[in-house]
Image 1 (spheres, rainbow, N blue to C red):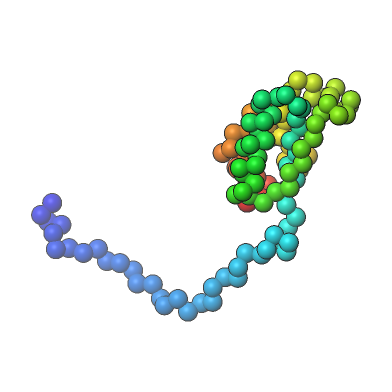
Image 2 (cartoon, one colour):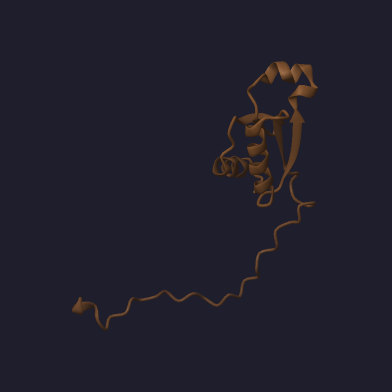
Length: 115
């Protein structure tokens, strides 16, 4: 590559940064209300515990309201979900059951505007 020696790539010069900086992101209280994430669970469910841990970790990165519902406390919910727990709903739409992959959860929250 001896032909390249001594040559320099032209670099476009940027104009001086004279434009005002964009305003800071609004505080959570001023922004849109957070997305509502509901975890349908039951006691003694190891998959539910794992899903709760994934949601807790994601809450540190994303802004959303989390509601945990024990399906065994409501006969209607126990009948609807049976052994199909955990179930995670975002804004009332069931998105995950049995497993909650962190990357897919994050993508769904972004799609729904929580991040």
